[in-house]
Image (cartoon, rainbow, N blue to C red; front, side):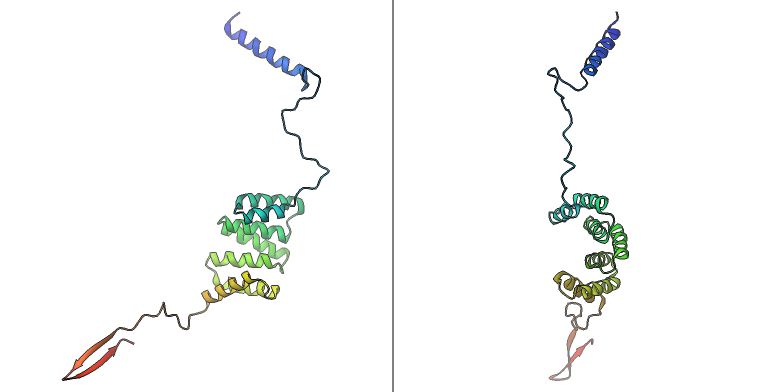
Length: 191
């Protein structure tokens, strides 16, 4: 018998020995090489709740996965879509976030979190005028109760309104003192 044939025979006999036990050890008890599954009779933790906690912890990718799991359990309602959109916003996926948040508003046009998050996306994308309108709608629906929406609205208004007086943007006038004759001076300005 050649060496290769001996190796093949040894491998075949080892495989045959494994298949004879059918998962049962020498003692006759079932041996598992995979972990036990979850108890299907118990209720799992809500995916939205898990996602919200992960967002607070700064784990945006994991939060997105939890929100997607919630979408599988609850369906694509306005709350789930708003949460998915906010996770995409935190991940810097502004186009996806805007699209998903608009879908959330199609599902429920009075969803204050979806309006606020859409306003944030629009501000990030440089659409301050549209963001201002969205924040105004969120502020009205929330009856002015949320400080964050109020601050977002103030920022959007500041970015869309022309400044009446901003001392940092105004150039200081250049003044020169010019002598005219003996002891007479004229102050010139470029205003």
